[in-house]
Image (cartoon, rainbow, N blue to C red; front, side, top):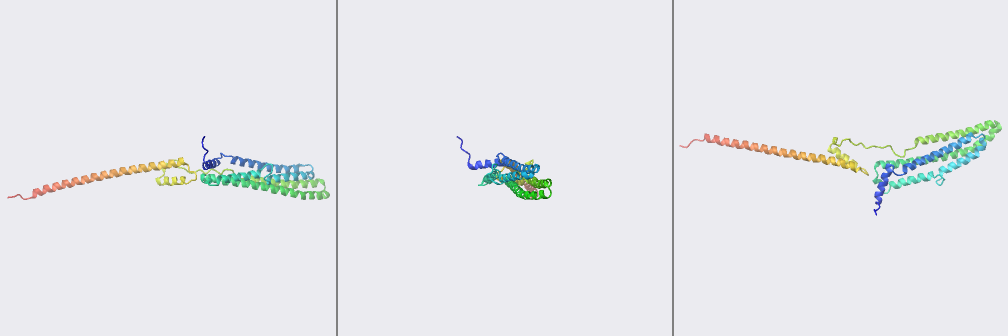
Length: 288
C-alpha cells in the first residue's frame, strides 16, 4: 500500500488548491451570498405584502411576526438556515489553512486571496447586521404606526388613516431596498483580480546581472515556479559557459599573439646580432 503523503505536503497541496479555486471555499461563499440575497428578498416581500394589503391595520401582526422571524434568521447562528454559522465556519477553515506554517507554502497571491475572502465574509456579516437592524426598527416603529392609525381614523377617517399607514410601510420598504442596493455595490469578490508577474518574452534580452536578479526574486517566493527558475538558471549557465569559453579563446589567442610577437622579436634580434658580427669582421684590420 502507498504511504499517505506527509501532513506538510498535504497542507501545501491544500493551500495551492485553495489558490486555484479547486477547493469549495469560493462556491460556498457564493452560496452564502445567494442565501443573504434571499433573506433581503424575503424582508422586502414582507414589507410589500403589508403595503398591498387592503386592510393594513389587520396585517400589522403578520408584518411583525415575519420581521421577527427574519431578524432571528439573520442574527442567530442556530437558525434553520445557518448563514451566520456557515460564515464563521468558512472563516475558521481559511484561518486554519493559512496558519501553522502553511502560509510558507503559499504564494503571495494566495495569501492575498485568503485575506480578501475573509474580508468578503465579514462584509456579509455586516449585511446580516443591517437586515437585523432594519427589521427590528420596522417592527418597533409599527407599534407607533398603529397608535397613529387609531388617532388618524378618528380625526381624518378610515381611508386617510389607511393611506398614511401604507405610506409608513412604503418608507420602511424604501429604506430596506436602498440598504440592500448599497450592500450589493460594496460586496467584495471572492478572488482578487489576477496580478500577472511580468516575464520577459526572451531571456536573451537580459544581461547576466539582470538574469541573476530575476532568479533571486523568483526563488524568494514562498512557492517558486521551479520550472521558470530552472529556465533562468540554464540561461545564466549558458551565458557563463559562452563567456568562459570566449575568455579562454581570447586568452589563447592573446598568448599565441604574444608568442608570435616574441618569436618575431627574437628572430629580428638574432638577425641583427648576426649582422653586427658580420660588420664587425669586415672592419677588423688584417694581421701583417
